[in-house]
Length: 89
Image (cartoon, rainbow, N blue to C red; front, side, top):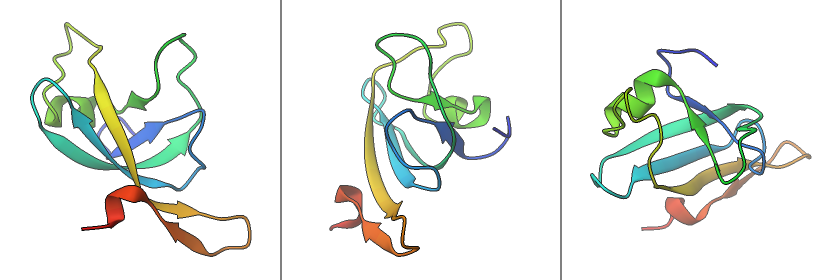
């Protein structure tokens, strides 16, 4: 993952997925691309780049926050793209 990019790691979303990540506490959101696998800590659903975490109000000292992850576009094995829940108005 690029530390300054809008990217994230997920164990469940396919690589290349575009998703909206929202910090539940602050309401701030960012759009990320899943570019890696992880996190490998029990109970965590996504690892964000430091730049993205800062954008949505996660302080470096805290390092962890409750977030919602909503897929926007999910790449399929045949090369097509499936619209995610966050792509709908």
